[in-house]
Image (cartoon, rainbow, N blue to C red; front, side, top):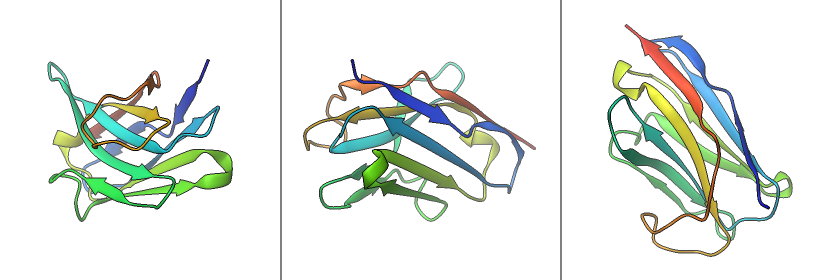
Amino acid sequence: QVQLIESGGGLVQAGGSLTLSCSASAHMNDMAWFRQGPGQERALVAGIRFNNGNTYYSTGAKGRFTISRANAENTVFLQMNSLKTEDTGIYLCAARRTQSNWYSKYDYWGQGTQVTVSS
């Protein structure tokens, strides 16, 4: 059973920074971060491919967030800068073994880590 373990959430003031990490118990090709805000559906924030390093960012994440990977540790990081109150939500790590469209189904999900941005 593949496990995804997330860490790094917390409470931060608007304009601050946080870094999230997610470690997979097995090698994955695509890993991504989703955000689920209060009363909202999950939304893709950023993704990265382990085979070639290609990345994806949502419109809201571009220029503020950076996704990176540590191949040997099957770990992905999300550096979030200039945080806004609308970034508040549960951040979930997702992964799959094969390359696919960023918005296609992910096979494995973490439990999520809470990020709260205060004004």
